[in-house]
Amino acid sequence: MSANIIIPVDFTKAAEKAAEFAIGLNSKLNAKLTFLHIVENDEDRQTAIPSLSSFVAKLSLGEMETEQVVMKGNFLEDIGKIADASNADLVVMGTHGERGMQKVFGSYALRVVESSKRPLFIVQEESEFKDIKTIIQTVDLEKESVQIVRYAAALATRFNAKVLLVGGKHEDSDFKAKVNSNMLFCIDQLKDQGIDFEFHFLERKNFDDNLIDFCKEKNGDLLAATHYQNTFYAFSDKFVQHLIMNRLHIPIITVESTQTTKTGQFGAMFG
Image (cartoon, rainbow, N blue to C red; front, side):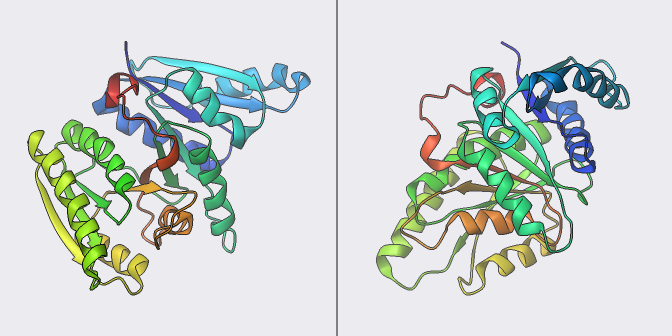
């Protein structure tokens, strides 16, 4: 079974950016690109079909396999459901960067994450695609934080990239042990696949800002972090939301912790 990448299209600049990134990723992933537009009612379908065709026709797709789908539904709530139903490997979605609205659009993107078992690759309108050479993955107290390593590892393998594992420094012995255990698990996963890696611990105070400063220092090309709707610990949905709209415009790959499975049923790309 071939891999499948879904690109939600709402005909905005953000959607154009998502398409650009999907094409760039697909130079190494060799997946089918499915361009998805969702309409609110059947009357909009007839105008949406040629609009989507025109959108796709402007892209530099080369010989890539593509599909165009127009469906009725709710744009944010149904993307994940459609991705699951079609057994997609990845959703590549753009998010708007209008001044003063970043948090709003960041939360919109998280609604897609929360409705799906599929990983979501999110790019800002201002992001520019380049080959992925350095992936920076967060590791935290939650045991589910290690789930994202499989996706970071898959992309690292395809792009011959290095993975930098980053956790917070803890003084509490129990918290420190939890982070160290999760870090060691990720290290073992990367070692088993022959992926070049490093691990680092940053000050927990202002961790979000420290992480982005670290990304700048290390020339990070991609952030990887598990998303939590609910968590007892400090890593919350707000953390990933902040990463989505980071000031360096680094794209992020994330997956919802409560909806992922351990059976490996994620298709050809991440299986």
